[in-house]
Image 1 (cartoon, rainbow, N blue to C red):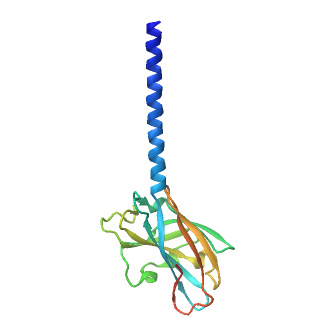
Image 2: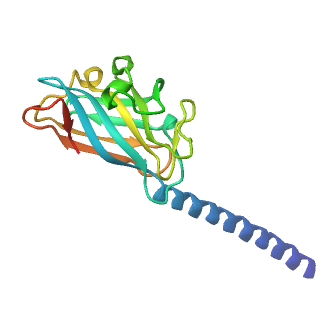
Length: 189
């Protein structure tokens, strides 16, 4: 009876250790999901006289977030008529801003399913063409060719969407375009 009780106690201890380990893993994953993510700090558009042809989304990580890999991030964006799902195109990347945000990359190379990245601030050099990861204090711009996604964005159009990282909270996109486009650069958020 003593041997049976010892074996039962050993099995119970092993099960308790496994449950404790699983609970610890789940809590760490939950904390990472809640505290990690992206935030959109500004949105600007490039307009000709009648439509917005390009969007730039200024993106950084949330406070306390771990690094976010933009190569596994998707953008879901809709102009109420059409929804586009975009992924990163490594052929449309710039490690710095040159000649203005809308002229740094050739947006005509972007398709309705691809976005580009322009690095605005990256103190530790973590955001590279093949590994575009951003962390604390980094600021990047995600470039979208709205002509390819929606045939441009008209005045008085509501646009919504999310920037969805592989893990963590999504960055929210939401704005309504003005009644007329007076300037070439339109501040939307």
